[in-house]
Length: 169
Image (cartoon, rainbow, N blue to C red):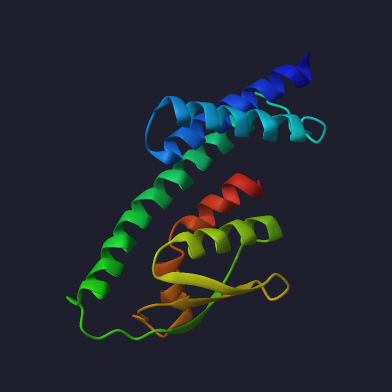
């Protein structure tokens, strides 16, 4: 019964995410989303090891995850505007380059999530992640500063602290 309710919860979550991602609610979207979400849920039903608990720590992590997602959305909108300025030619000089960003987080998973976030933000791509050295090399479409700590402040911003709170504590 627990696996069934877990699979149902995952299916509904995936359906909502799929519908939001497609941007429209129609019968074809709902049917396709339902097929995809149920298939994924059935495939993962055996592998699910994460249980839902409502401990204060879990609730706090969920709040930080929401903050992380919100910050990502705001950052993505701002960076889309910056890249649009470059593409449309309002910003005439750009200086693409690679910047090494020092990291403070310990978890390899948190570093990977941070690298994926940086890559999904327009204008930056994490090209190398060194877990042992705790650093990330980022291709930046318009390098604004050469100092790694200032570059970290601009590129990574609040993401590192939020990723640490969600994944390491």
